[in-house]
Image 1 (cartoon, rainbow, N blue to C red):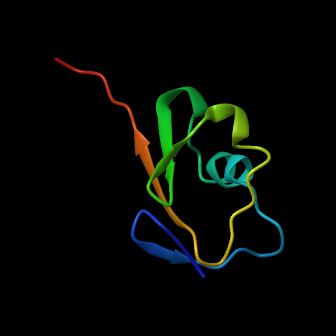
Image 2 (tube, helix red, strand yellow):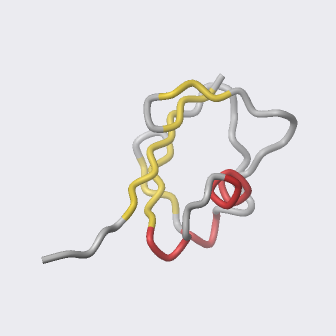
Length: 65
């Protein structure tokens, strides 16, 4: 079971970071993904498979003033 933003997540089959963020409505150009304490380059989202023990934090950038 992985953890995404503090919530437990059990992947249904093979789930990549890219498919997870898309299925949850995140816009790739407005997020950063930390995987097990390291920032994951956007180029690796589609090739990185979520493993049971992964800890993932997804941070959205917001504008304002």
